Length: 300
Image (cartoon, rainbow, N blue to C red; front, side, top):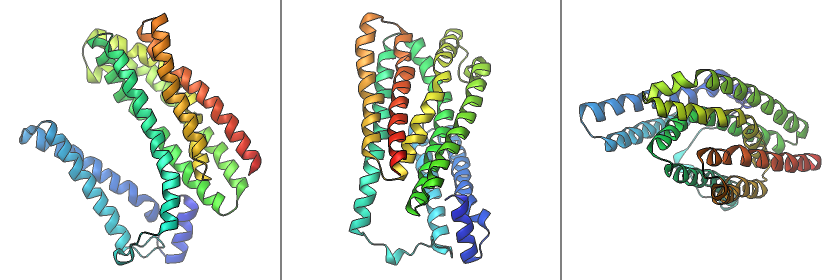
């Protein structure tokens, strides 16, 4: 829910806007803290191992879901949830599936390609595999931040496109790109400056730290290109255009990486060959998204 929706709902129902906007954050904080506490209790106290970690995640997410549902049921806003009125509406369901399934399949493409890259790197030894695993832990900070911008622009564009405010659609995409590029640039600098201490949090093995920091130096500067994928694909989803972004993602992050790893490794079998599959495919996908978004923008 963006700032304007919050204010509108606040005026209609005399509820402070900041409460409507911040409750999801509060519930997420509760979920995270509860997950950490339960991880410690189930693993350290009850010695449940991996099963304990899974149980902690399940319980914390269930609590978060209950809090959100309870808030919607007890709320007096336009988002009030009435359990007795829950129905399956055919037209709405078809619309949700038409937009949601391609978006979900797009996420699956990323997981498939990441699994393929992990399999390729495993062939270069345990140190390389361990370094890549640690890097992925740190890398998650960028994906969470960038994913948040993608969700935000989808919501904002969808609201304004539905209201016929195409000028705000175009402006919001520019603003979101600028903010995401700014924060991504700051994160890149942070990673490059503190990469050795960051890897030291997870391991004391000198070779793993060296390999991991080297990987980070190769990949993180190219986060800038991925910003265009996240923001532009999110904006296109907001106007209901999901098929072409899915095709671009399927080609750029899955098919092209398979071709790259299968072909380039035969020519130059080295770790950096696998690593460069990310920058190469991000750049190509970003160019395709920019071209397609520019085409759609002219038609708005």
